[in-house]
Length: 526
Image (cartoon, rainbow, N blue to C red; front, side):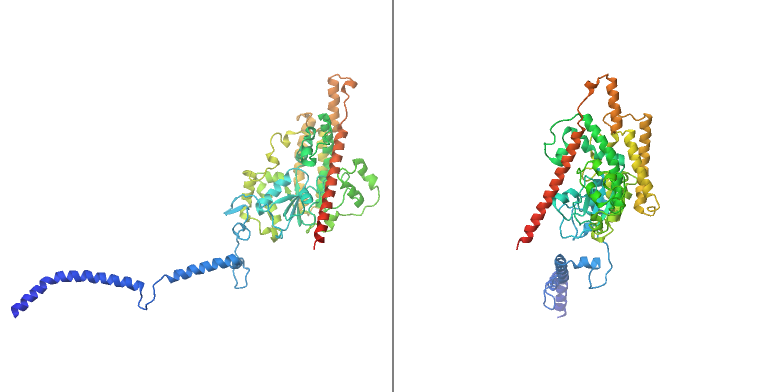
């Protein structure tokens, strides 16, 4: 028994290692399978699933769906909800879902990317609208493209308002009350910016259109679109003479234009700058309607006492905040690489005067970048500075014409540096700018008088200098009176101008009649 037990024990012992190994592997596999089963079928019998993740995903989906329908999160971030008190944070318009358009992009840290404005302007938006007023030249465009880049909305010309109708464009480019302008925007404007440019440079750019008349191009294409006025080609010398006379006259218009806006539409005579009557004012406001001699102040007004009167557009509230400018902007300084960004800041600050426009303006840290995009990198539409060929610096002016400019600038300096105006910020700015302009013109005046600056027949000479040169030519060529006599065609150009202005007037009258008839038809419809 003992031997058998002993044998059995030995046999069992000898076989245990084999059985033990097999059992251990089986048990290990069994335990792993049990763990897998527990994952699939927990003890409570329910299925195992990542419920927390599913719930979170559903919650996010629900939140996004609600935000699309009703932007509660946006309102909470803006502090515009009553659900709880929240801290307001700034959301740049470029990231604001309610305002996303093709506007300049604020890339953060003072960086930006210029984008063109949204040209399709919704009628439903309540804008605070700005007039960009300035003597005819190419520099109002310099200002409104800054506005377009800063706020993302487009500008519109006064004539487009007149002929195409009133739209919701927030920036209005205006030459009014100059004879090249028209109050075409009705009563939709809220405030004004006044653009002041060097009088000499303004004359060159403004009269580039007149330079082309002798070639029968600009007036035809830009004003009349007809050939009927170009029945003959007068000698080009007559065009120069006519142009020179106009430039001298425009010097009065230049100062008168500044007075109009600075004084909130106060009625003054163009040539004497005296207070005038509504009757005389209405005559002045008809382009080409009267000869200059028929508008003479002494003839129309005389020595009677004049009560100050204002343009009804200004006195009747056609500009919500009044006609006086909110800022005076220098186009030359806007182009200056040192002072330019400060001009852009002035423009932006005017737009920030009212939240209805201010909410669209790009972040302040990006204003300098907007200036760089437009001025340094040349982004945006073409401006006067992109004009090829001759520049405004390539033309010279005679001493007669420079003297006329200096006299008008002296008048403006004396007026706006006087006691009545010395506490007015805009008046101080005008004096600052015009003093600089006058100094440049005085240098040129001295150079012309000394002979350092040589004049050619194609420069702006003025009627006296041009007649003097003509006489010298006749003498040098030893031509007789009969040989040198030529047809005086300067009257042709004056007639051309009167007919052009008359046609403008007829077109405006026809357009107003058409709009009135359309409105009556609309009101009559059930």
